[in-house]
Image 1: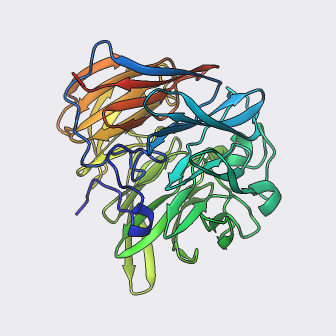
Image 2: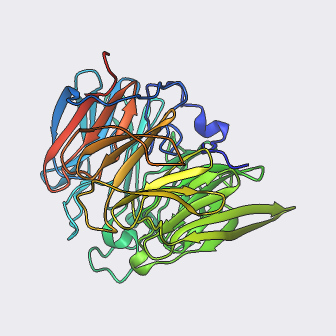
Length: 424
């Protein structure tokens, strides 16, 4: 039976203690869903109350919220800077210089990843492959590593002949799974995927020769076994978190290695895709020690480019190829409904962050408009809409009725904390 939540195994989920947290990319369990204790929204205010606003430099990075702090990155003075703010008033508690800013003709020049908070540590990975662990309270550097210098990962920049992150930078966020911090390092020297000790940065294992793409890895429990799923330049690959051994693979290559979607695990099925391959449903099964990954459906009409979809029940909600919002049946792959969306990007490059909050969907579009939709696979049902920011490709965080959203798609912008609940 297909279920709507990504299942994390216990060592990875132990730090997800509070409904008022959004501690990593796409939320508490990296599925785009809030915890079940977060009350659903029933409407959106016409003029949402801004609790605080913080001026930021350029970038597409996504904020996260944990233990009363907001963490985000921006570009300032030609550097990627990681910030920690007080979540109640937006006052900066500390900042840390992480790396040089990567230049990209796709612009703006700025960070694109999301921090990851685990207890008293915050992990952040720069566009140029610098991974750092810092203390949550004061930003003290605890350990660091560099994908290019320490693992030989390639980097050539814009117009690179090497596909994937070697061209547009490391945009993925590392993952905590099985007691390890796992990153898509992208080295072809046997370190495509690497597991680090979260406390010390020591390497536990290295696996594969996969070049890094742009998708963040996920943890899932498929057919009785915990695994980490990475969407690399070569396609989907699943490894065992304890030792990095490959469980299964399915090739999926695109021009320039632009595999961007964070995979979604639904039961024993994994769903992902690209602008060239369409949306794919992959069934995972095991017979004794042999794993099989089988494409069971493809939907090219629901092709998704770089806005990762969200699962609810047996359905998937995402951004289609024609500036539209789509609902897809995850069992059959058929489109349940399609609705034109209020996007500012061109067809195929439209973006929206979709957050599942209870039985509602909060959709923040690239124009900065927020739509509240019913989780209804029978029809598009809009419950409200409001403007929350300027143009953005940054995935917001949501905790305790407050939306933390950063714009700055075309240059300097703002990080806002916005109250979305009525009569707080």
